[in-house]
Image: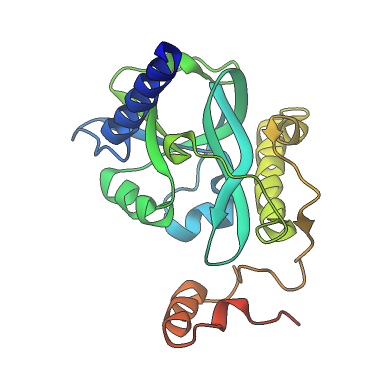
Length: 230
């Protein structure tokens, strides 16, 4: 009984931590950086939301784990997410954003929690960086909630392509051997529930206003988001 009570206390502490930390507005005058570990690693995907997010640099995040574990109810897809995992590490990128742009990115990543990473949990591939007056933020799974891919919410190739294209961009720009291989090896949750949607992406990334179109039509037609793909 005492053990169950201790587990309950730990759960409450975790919930409180995320409630306190989630999407905290940075202090004015501070320098803020976003850490991208999935679609935000890829230039076109990243700048679709923040056009100024052109220049990125590589880093490693310690005590976090990247995995396939975040679902989209709208498009029936499982996306990448990141959660606390002592002893694990993830290669990623970081780039500066002002507070206004961070709020804009929060809307895009509304299914996640923007969490401030401790500076001593970051490594910069040999580059010496000072952490003074700097915040490094990463979009994590809310309360470490991980839901693995299944037949109804598979991994989709179009999203994998964006993720790994970003990894190759960093590998080529910074001449980091095997950076892309590290992207694969530090990602958990790969699954046979994986579909190749390159010809007909489940999320139509290249269509202007695709999200607004789908939002509008799904309000009118309950069957719209489950129409057959041909």
